[in-house]
Length: 214
Image 1 (cartoon, rainbow, N blue to C red):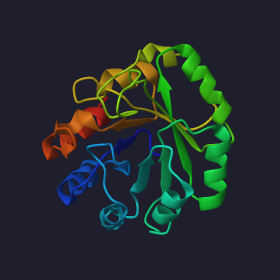
Image 2: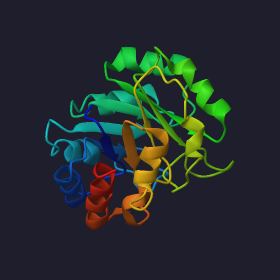
Image 3: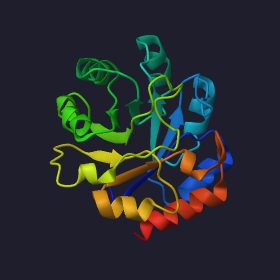
Image 4: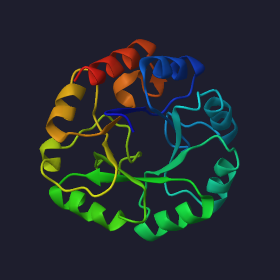
C-alpha cells in the first residue's frame, strides 16, 4: 500500500466511483448486505467493479455471508478482497480465504481496548484488520452508522498485520484520526454522503484531499 491508503466504501453509482478514483482512493468498497441502504445486488456489484481501473482495489463488504453468496461474488472475477463485517470467527475467515482464494479483511468492532486485543486471534486467519466503531446492541447495521470509537485506544498497540481505521470518519476529523492512530489505511462511508446511501462527489473529493494533506 502507499503511505496512506484510502477506501471509499458503500459505492453504488458510476459518478461516485469516478470521483473516488480521480481523488486518489486506493480501495473502493461495495456493500452486499440487503439491510444496508448501500446494498448492491451481485450483478450490479459486478458491473460497477468492472469499471474500476485495475490499480484500484475492489472490495466486497459482507455480513456473515453464506458460501453460496461468496461463490456468486467470487465468480465475478472483478473483486480483489472480501471484507467480513459480521460475527465471523477466525476459523470462518480462514476457511473463506482458502476456499475462494481472495484476501480476507475482518472488521473488528471496537468499544474498549479489550476489543482491539481480541483482534489478535485473526492473525494468520485474515489478511487485513479494519477497526470500526461498535454499534449499539440491537442496531440494524454492524457499521456505516457514522459512529466513532476512542481512537487513543490504538496508541502504542502492536498490530502484527496490515490494518485500517473506520467509523465516524469525515472531512473535518480525518486528519486528527490519522495523527492519533497512525493508521496506514482509512475507510469512509457515511462521512462522504449527502443522505444514507447517497454519495456526494464533492465530499469524496474533499475527504481524500484532507486525508492526503494530513
